[in-house]
Length: 436
Image (cartoon, rainbow, N blue to C red; front, side, top):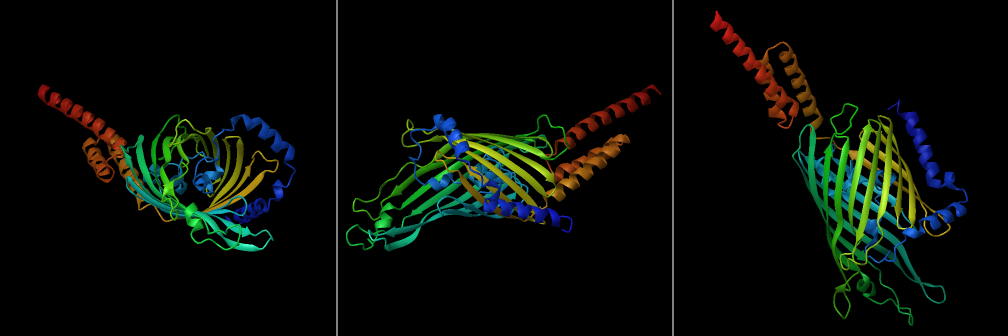
């Protein structure tokens, strides 16, 4: 901890500086206007036509730092909003809190948990987006005040199929989700009295699911690691329907379509400290496929500076809105902290500066690392006996390896080769005995 102290102090100062907006206190008017004009051709006519827009707000933290290019990476608890397959391959059990300071005094708060049992993963998340709602009469007197909010709860399940030593498996997962949009009661224009149930007429309930696949394997890998260096992910998010008008005289009615998307992503760790990721996502209107929105693309890079600190950056273009992110991630004991600054350039002349933070408690890997070390030790012991031409002993040890981890392919290969050599040795001995 003493060695980490100066770094943590410096990181805290940097993040505090970001939070105050000091480093970005320049006049961005000309830059913002030029970028807005450049990206204006990507603006879609159906932008903003879906309901439950809070489902598109990033959790914050690591995934937003990487430009939301996370479908093909999903290497921490943020996976739950990008690729539900990833809970079956995460190393650590995690519990995390996210805070994302959004626009116009609105905020997104999230609490999430995930754990894994061998190849089976589960997770859960609850997020709440809220913004103050205040109504004034024609004289400027406050007559109603409360919060508009959208709350989403998710349950995650996944399994990693065909897991092995070289091919790390094909993970598949699902999120089951429910969202509630709460609109506070408001007044009529005449008496100024609050209309009971008026907010409930505008409130809505949605049920939906996410589906995901994540494939991981090694390709053009120039360093030693147990983890795959290439991942490819596919996901379908927010597939479902919403209902609204719960106290309406006309009864329950339909709602705007949900912000459903189909996405594909890839991540590549081309050498140990650096990981890059790329995402492509296409919004889909499930009520009318012809009324689609423009696609969006994100890319991110993570650079590990030390064992306990990484710098992350990202870029996303969504419609006509480019978004730049910069973040830092520090591991202190078993707590992982992330702070992220985002510059969101919209079509207005004033750029939006946002700040998000997250904290994850790493609760261990259920002994998986210890198991891997035991397997490696036994495997190396088998290699020693193989080198001594004691093939039977090598086979015996490698069979112990497979009892611990039946997917450890080097042990299978070793047994096959040692068996062949042992048979050749016995045949040679038999021939020698026959000739004598």
